[in-house]
Image 1: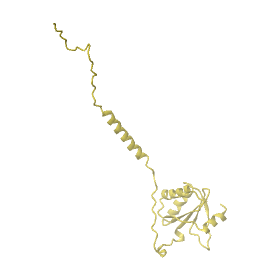
Image 2: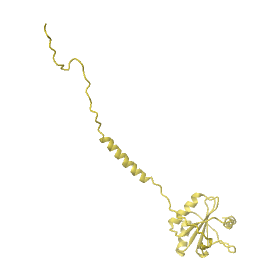
Image 3: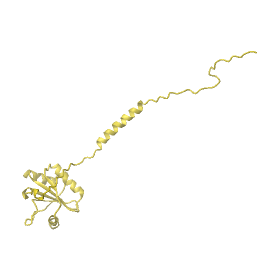
Length: 173
């Protein structure tokens, strides 16, 4: 019998094996993208920080006798009315003296100009801010901004008295 020799497979017949691909993934573009996103979010968070006004609240004294009284000559009272109205008068409201109530507006030509004049005339002036119950929260923030703009050192947010409310009603402004 004759033997038939088979030659080695030259790629033209027989079983074909799938070519194995490399399992390594190039991570360089992914790292670049991660650093790009990290930089982007770090920058955008610094731009989106809210600006807030620092407000220092006084400590309540244990004894009411320890509270210092304000001189009428050093007092300047600002009344925040309803419908975005603002009024002011010099001094304190006393039983026998009715002060002259003046209507004003917010901004450079209104209360800011008056506050600057009062501070120049008397650096020891204390501004008493008294909002009525129906005044806007925005108006209170606006007057606190004016205190900051005019660099007012001493001011206080005080509850409005019945006499101040009556003064606004009877003034006709």
